[in-house]
Image (cartoon, rainbow, N blue to C red; front, side, top):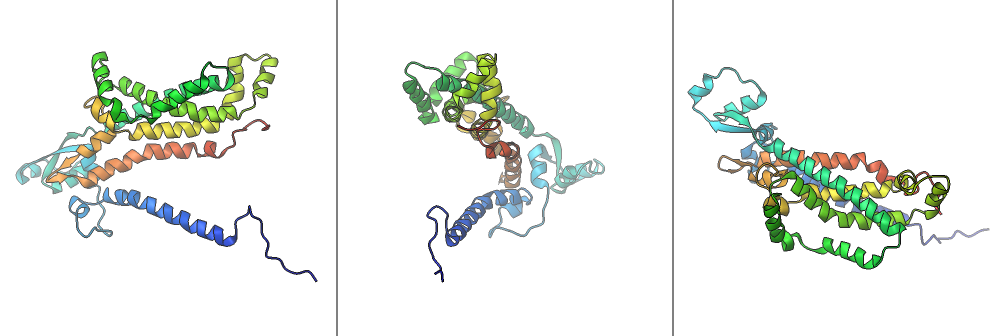
Length: 317
């Protein structure tokens, strides 16, 4: 008669360990999602509800925050408002209920567009140049390669405030202040160090034999890079692009210092949304909610690439 054993694998976690880990993950997810959920809820509150104490969880939703975000308003007399005729939109109706009229569009969309152009443009350049540099460090004998790689990484360690004033003076002399080109070049320079280090690790894992076999078949070095290396490095490129985009999308210090008008991005603009009597918190929350959408969509679109193995289309050695 065989005796039951309680032995278990030291690699496979026990049921209790899995249960505890699951509870910790769920709690962490809930804690991190609470601020985002609160911002989303605040965007649908009225100004009085947004600053009420104790905070209101149950409230009557309104689009006033989004209307205030996308429009500028002026206060008018009730007689003047009655002479305008029926409201033309829901925002017009909400604005008139506050004894105000819409004077025109706000600057949020231009600032949001600037964020899109600058963030995605710098991300593309950083990933493109970083891929080429990482491939060079990985495949060729570069003199003082280790020292150069450390120097590249050291630029990432430097706090932005340490170089803020020199960059400001340099941009003023070059005419790059308050320009989209200047911000794209700056964010590319900051992100390229991260891109090189991340991508070099992925490219190092791709066997050289695949490129050598392709070149024996008649491919040039560039064709082998494009048709052999890039498909297998897709995972690394996707992950690097997400990290670079997050930095460029959320960057605040340089955006405040180097932009003020035509090239200003959304992060320094959103805190300046002022309503009557102080900060218009529903409009700020609405701007923040919309600002989160592109980075969320970009990450979701690349989720499949993030989950794929680096050896796509090849057998790992």
